[in-house]
Length: 459
Image 1: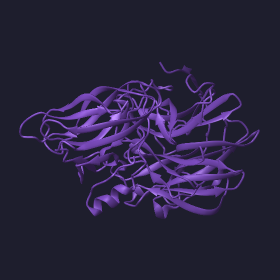
Image 2: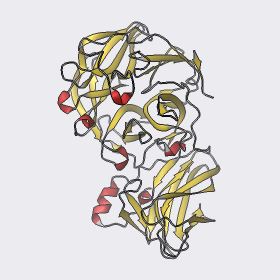
Image 3: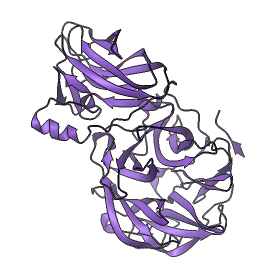
Image 4: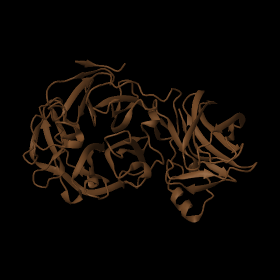
């Protein structure tokens, strides 16, 4: 069957708030796309979760979490857009350590917990698959390895695990990164199963990918409000000398699942997280629900693409999407997704920031009450044109509707108007703005009555 797709901020805060916000300074996502914030349709519109993509010759091979009675689904493409689903199981049997009859109810009927494959070549006719399955001995998920002589398999499993640490909740979501002839394994300890932290780990493996060696390094854990109780699905990519660690977070089973990233100048870190997620349900205006399980690959045109899954409208399966991945100032930008800029990371004067637990990143900016009050966002876009500006606000003014004056690139651009919501009831005001290619400034000033700004999105 063939399947195709139809700043840095100057922060005037109390000492405790300043310390918290300093971690985010300078890391705002730095671009937008001139299109409406909607993803193109899924390229595989059936269950194809946690996709991993490998290129061999002129063909791309995609592998996915178990479904339809197959441990590992797979498909092929020459352009990352039109895909042919293959009917065989790339991993027809599991290692002796794994329980093939175990069921994972949150994954849906028939889910046996064989998840998130990673496949790579170690020679012209030598391929390795890392996969997650349920360990008989510990009762936790662990990562095993299998080998094949062709990309489609069948992959033959090894009888022992590659990594298995039941004391940390088990392990899932293996991925691979290579540099200077060395291969590294990344994974997540599944601590959310057992009220533990979830860490993304990195360790070197042997050239054949079948044994860990050297030092294990914990890279990041869940510590941002939008991540919920977990981070998972690590994908490491290097762009212009900087390491970019993509990851997913929050609960996989609904629209709260998302993808974000962290950056570092050294392989083992330290990694600094972006202050706002890269892909969310809202960023795609609901056209993708719960985007995550991402992988990065370079397309046949030399353009990077991000491959990920998202729920169908009925939340009965996770389809696969393929979107252009742009870079602006070393930061990733997904085509069709709104880009969020947190207000606390803007430059502001005669205004103040405060903690607000229900806000986008837990902090908002208010007190924009004086003639010289300003909150100025620096926004980078790749092309000149008309964009949509979404202002996330709360208006608790007793006097009624409020507003802020708007200045774009030092030119007055009218106002942003806010109906009454009550304080800490965050809503979105939308309007159009015209931006130039490259750096732009968007400044908010005092208007009618009083309102606070949580964040802006540009798309």
